[in-house]
Length: 419
Picture 1 (cartoon, helix red, strand yellow):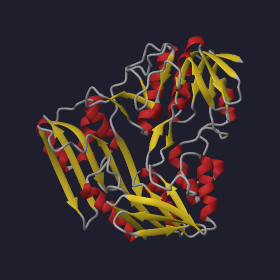
Picture 2 (cartoon, one colour):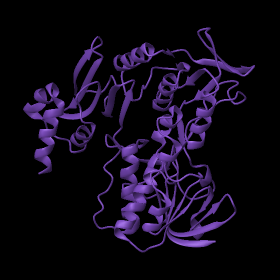
Picture 3 (spheres, rainbow, N blue to C red):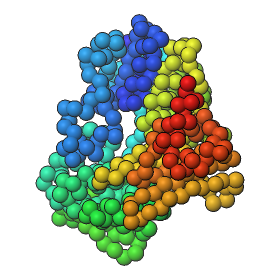
């Protein structure tokens, strides 16, 4: 057993951001970072490029041992936390060892979620959440020639593209539309068109009835009667916050770990940030999971500042969905409330849709303020758009000008506000 002032469980973006925020305020207090993986910290967003070989294993680390030594942080890898005990301010590792802390941050991220499809558990399949997963898929791709990807989200599509570029025959199966949390059907139709033009078969709208395996191949049967087979089956049907080690503790959870605007949990001296944290939404009173990289960094920074008592701390304003996505040389992004409900009143929309030019742009306004935007091959700056939403910029007579030239006019508006 050993003691530390600050204990950070998890070593990706939220954990690293918290660690650096702590060190800005407290240069000497003992800091320990614990990671379940054997590797040094890396970004999960790089994994599809490890699969393709574009990024070698040696170049994925965000930080190395020299960095940890320089800022006086004890980094423990291959050290999975199996239990948290708020009553005596300690955590238990899989090895049986204990660490006691004064302040604890949980930044454990999320695990792949296995869809409840008959036969799937018993069929050999791959998931993509760790560097080990990526290397296993890459090894299989070097020997095999076809793949089925279950799921139409970012992880599945990134991997499908990189598999196709490596020469595999790839089929994507999505129960609904592609990227349905980020884009409407017009936009996803353009994305699907690009995938088809690049040799990736995309099947949407029909649930999977069962999965089987025989003779080294995987067979997927759909409700519409279609049967598919391939050598590799990748399951990318969603993720869930990694919270199983909290069983029996006083840390309150719902879909994730519930936190306030300073990333504090209801348990004393325990914070949570990143994909595991369920924090307030910018658009309403509900608490949401907002598993995106910018939010992980922001939440980690807020948690670290609060843990170290930094007087410059500004509370969390709330989660704003935001994703940028590049596919086969095309660029897309979605920020804020770009998919408002049909019954939502008081909204205005400005839409540009050009299938022939592979261009799509949607802006959503409420009472003269931007609340959401989405685009494919358009001139947007997602960071500027996010700041306009956060600051609730009143566009007034500038709204039409902004819709016609969002990149230039958005930068001009924000330059004035930042002065």
